[in-house]
Structure formats: structure tokens, C-alpha cells
Length: 398
Image 1 (cartoon, rainbow, N blue to C red):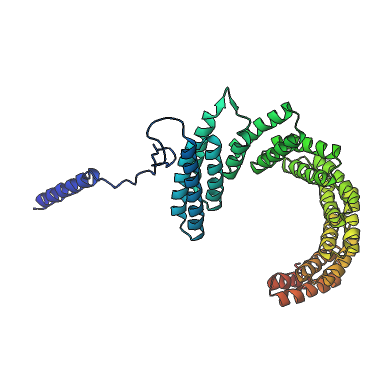
Image 2 (cartoon, rainbow, N blue to C red):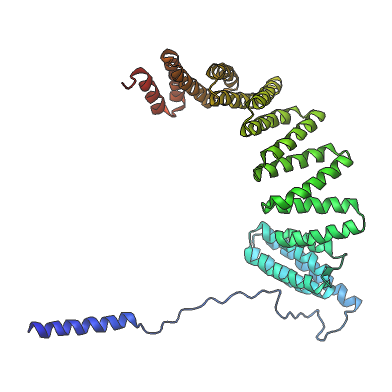
């Protein structure tokens, strides 16, 4: 009886296993991929049925229709009917193809900018695919018609296609150099620098900004000089070249001084101090932080002044000049009181308490931690931390 029962159970299990292992064919509904409306065969009542040149009247009617569609699309976009607006623009782009490359690229450029602003990735892809085809048709011996270059530059930039923007701007730069056009050279270099920076391609960005810096200095354009020095300092910091970063920051400091941009100079002096600290040059770092404090104090920029003093105090701590660090923290507390910086005050008293403990001055450490605790209670922040610090000083471990 048991053998018979086991046989039935085993047969049932085997049948169930077969059902699980070999399910009947299941067909799921597939969502069809959306066709690019700019890559389909486009027909319109305004377009001739056969391939021939348009008459002046036909061109006029097509242009009027494009303008009408564009205006209507703008209205639909404002009304919130975004899909409808893009449908109208796609018809306008397809119609503009009949009027020539410049007309079509201009429409793609406008719609591309809107697609980017509205984060419509599918539309960006559609527009880019069509633009690539138009560019290929406009290219002869790997050279784009020079008159069309600015249009393609604007269109690719509107679509935020960095790689194509770089390629097209490089061609524009070559052409500008060939024709000795300084203004176009500068514009192309500026754009290339921005694009490389956006791609974090600092090694290619650096020579671009070095050339722009040279141009700015030749033209005695001190505002542009400051901009390019900042970029070069940032680039060298990013590629971990602190000595080069410091060099550009020092040149930038001279630029700020020349233009009496003293607030920016005080902030920059802190950054210069940081670079000296990284390069293990504490004396130069100290001098730079002190200069930053003095300038910021004169300008009553207490937040900047406080930042400079805090950096200076930390530097003294790092090199175990504890008395100097305490003196700086005392000055920092005055600045933080003037600027009502309660969080800063709390942290300064905390740092002083830690230093006093290092100096075995328990009484002063307790006073500092008590002041920090009082502020922390007002802020309802880190109370347990300061209670713990006080407890460590009052009841030290044996």
C-alpha cells in the first residue's frame, strides 16, 4: 500500500516538474519602438509630388507655413501641451528641409534648445540623428561649408552634444586661424575651454586657457585675465599640481590688487595659504592667512576673516605651536561674536578645550568645554558630546 502511494506521489511530482520546467509558450505584448519623425518619408500638400526646384511662390508658401506652425507650437508649449507642440515643430522641420540646409538647421537648433530645457531625451535623440545626417550631406572632403559652420555649432550646442560641439568648434578654430580672424579665434577657444571643462578633460582644457590668457594680456583685458587665471588655477588643482595652481593664484592675486578687488583677494589669500600648507611650507601659509585676515577685517567681512583665523589656528595646532593656536582662537572668538556665529563659537571653544587638555591645563579645559556646552544647549546640538568631554576632564581614567 505504501509503495503504491509513493509511486503515485512520485508520478505527480514528476508531472508537476514537467509543467514548471516546460511552460506553454507565452507571448507578451511588445511596445513598438517610436519611429523618428524626422527620418520618415515626409509628404505635404505644399511640397511637389516630383523632385524639382521650388518656385518662388512655393518657397514663400512653405516659409509662411513654417512660421505658422512655429508660432502655433510656441502657443501650445505655453499652454502646457508639450507633445502637441513638438508634433507641430517636427512638421515645421520636415517642411524646412525643402528650403535648404540653413533653414532646417535653424529650426533644429531652436527645437533642440527647448527639448533640452524640457528634458525630453527622446526628442534630443531624434533631433541629433537628423542633424548628423544633414551635417554629413553638407560635408565635402571632410570639410563643412564655412557658411554653415556657425549654424551647426549653435545646433549642437543647443542639444548639449559636447563631443560634436568640440569637433565643430575645432574646425571653426582652424578656419579662423587660416583667415587670421582674432575675434573668431577667441570665441572658438572660449567655447572649447568650456566644453573640455564640462567633460572634466582638464589636460585638453589647460592649453586652451593658456592661449586665452596670452590673448587677454596682449589686449590688456584685465577682467578676462582674471577669469582665465582662475580657470588655470582650478585646472591645476584638479590634476593635483599644487605648485602650478599656486603660481596661477599668485598671478591672480596681482590681478585682483591691480583692479582693487580686495574682497576676492582676501578669499584668494586663504586658498593660497591652503596651497602652501599642502606644499609643507607653514611659514608662507601663515603669512597668507594673516594677510587674508587683515584685508577681510578692514572690509568688515567677518565670515572671511573668521575663516582665515580658523585656518591659521589649525595650522599652528598641526605644527604643535599650541600657545600660538590658543592666541589665534581667542581672536577668532571675537570675530565669531561680532558675526553671531554660534556654531563657530562652539567649535572654537571645543578646539581650545582640546588644546588645554594637551597642555595638561584641566581648569582651562573645563572652562572651554563648559562654554561650548552652554552654546550647544542653546543650539540643541552636540550636548552629549560636550558632556562627555567635561566628564573626561573631571574624572580622568587612571
